[in-house]
Length: 131
Image (cartoon, rainbow, N blue to C red):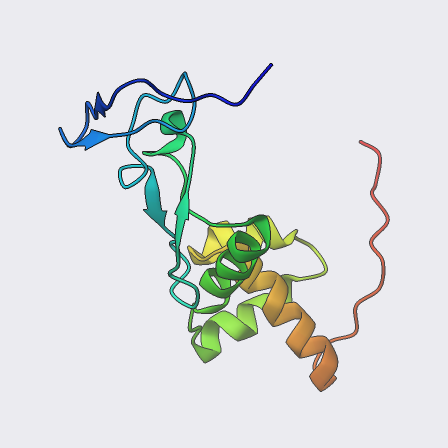
């Protein structure tokens, strides 16, 4: 099998411009397949398959994880919320505390790590009680 050589230009259904397809099944021009990464630290343009144009948000999994972690940590907590975490971390999960405070679970987990490093709490591995 040889390399595909298109015989004629196609019209992009999204923008209406004429383009020369690189494959026999191409149904959208390459400019319409460009998406910008949602991570503000990255923001680069990347190409996706046509069915992913409205869905793709990050250029890589690494970029996605960085942004999601950063989003969770941007929550500023008051001293009362900090105290609530300190008082309840032994009895409740991070998810339950996050629901009570109306914040992201990752933010609560991060705060617990900070409090442990500062020596404000001592965390031990929780043993699940069978009900």
